[in-house]
Amino acid sequence: MCGKIAFATLYCALLLNFSTYICLLDWYEFFTTLSLIDLNKEYKFDYIIVGGGTAGSILAFRLSQNPNNKVLLLEAGSMGKSSILDIPLITPLLHKSIYDWKYRTVPQDNACWAFKDNSSSWPSGKVLGGSGRLNHMLYTRGHPDDYKEWFIDCDCDFNYEQEILYYMKKSENQVGSQSNNEYYHGRGGTLIVDDMVYQSELYDSIFNAANCLNLPIRDVNGKFSSGFSPIQINIKNGKRFTPIHHLLQNQQPNLVIKTQSTAKEILLNANLEAYGVNFIKSGDKYDVFASKGVIISSGTIGSPKLLMLSGIGPKKHLQSIGIKSKLDLPVGYNLQDHISTGFDLIIFEEPLDFHKKFVSPLEVLKYILKENGILTSVGVEVLAFLNTFCLENVIGYDLCEAEFNHRPNIEFLFMQAGLATDYGMRMRHIVGLKSVVWKEYYSKFVNNYTASFLPILLRPKSRGYVKLKNSKIDSKPIINPNYLSEKDDINILLAGIRFIKKLVETPPMRKIGARFNREIFPFCKTFTFDSDDYWKCYIKYMSFTIYHPVGTCKMGSFSDESAVVTRDFKVKGAKKLYVVDASVIPKLISANTNAAVAMIAEKAADSIKMSEVSSKKMCKAQPICN
Image 1 (cartoon, rainbow, N blue to C red):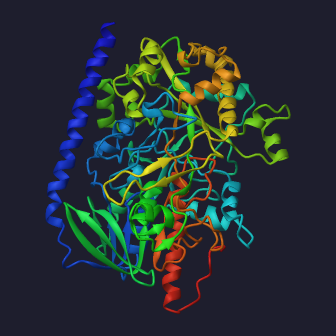
Image 2: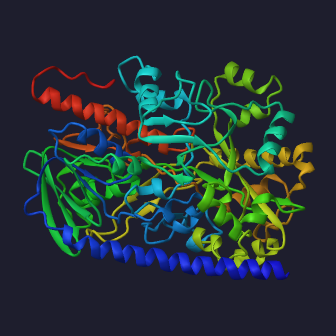
């Protein structure tokens, strides 16, 4: 008991000091940038990029490599200079901080019932580096057929190696165990990829359990896209390393970066040609102008918001909130997201190494001196991409995938902790858990050692939307992912829970004292525990985002009425206006999305350069499979 009291006291002190520190840091950055807001001598550029996340950082780097291009990168958030922000283990503490837009969905009819207002928190990076500074740094690419679906309406022969793999490799700087696999992995890109430094006893146990179930273990970013795999992450010397870190280390004099600068409107002339951006900084408005193009890279929520505020979006919706429609396009529709369930469904008889060292002062010292230890952990050591049909097929997993052409439809993240690990001090508030759910269910596990093996729905059928609440720049948009509105989605998550239970019952997992949590979720007690109806009830309550929203500025052919941008990333019907980020992804991939966004940015950079050459009539740019 004394140890737990000491833990609670130390953890509270760390939380308080951390929150105070980042608030002071943000104010310091605000005041030190006040002197940098004069643009009277610097308001004309070749390219303006709105949003300094993964895509915006890569575009800024690539376009500024040409010394003749003058490039402006606008970011609504602060610089986020402190290296403390790049300690991997503190990632959850950045959620709901000043570096987060703190979005929330509207109440969900079929999901998120255990969370406040029956809605889901949607963290999104409000800092230079974007959501790449808030995510869990996992590098996964997805299945080739995921990308083939992006070109399904394309009158061309899709070539994965040319259209996707080439740009995956170009964006990657693989320095880990796969660095010699040159066919599938790249060196020298802006997105560094390395192996995880920290490993607990859970690492070997998960792989041994997979072996017991005759499931493959391999690099899921190589020849195969399924199986169990050690995680690959964006880390360098024990710290988060993203494209913005690379950009700042290699910034050219022809690139100007303005932080704490919120884009208010895209400037369009009568011919719908983008010629600049109006933005707000410190309460003042500024106009900056671009001769070659305006590129919107503000993310799946921010990009459609800015387009609609500028008069580009569904005509009826814009008119209903008093915005003059300039271009009628389905902006904001086609919203998709990866959803998960299953916090604290695993209990251990004895603490794992992670539980013992969670807030150990010795681990802090180890991190400072050696850049290793538990602080380099992202909370996940192993992941798996699997197909639920092939998990039940007797012919063997790989043979099933090949025979029936099945790609993964579910991901598993094997996390060493749960909502009860920190005694309810922080994590339950970050995810927005209702107090009654904590009191009646999760509080029972504070004296246990829990873990979360999360099943993640990879290719949801449910679709949602983003709309504006009003015409004000500082109003949060209306976000409705329509989670679990399609019954197939909940059935796949149910199959995921069944598999987790099967995995935990293997000898390697029993050997480290793991067991499946049989505590009845009180809000589903009318159903028999472990029945399908019970778990469907549980999933509807305990469903939450995995932070991969896409699709609100869908990419497609010009004739596709559901598309907002064409495959050269140009907004349909507009000129010199591009959207490049996760919002253009037409259909979710079978993986985390950051690697795909980096690939898209590299692809867009080449496409924009081709357009520039074409406009000079030096040669005719070839369309990218359009």
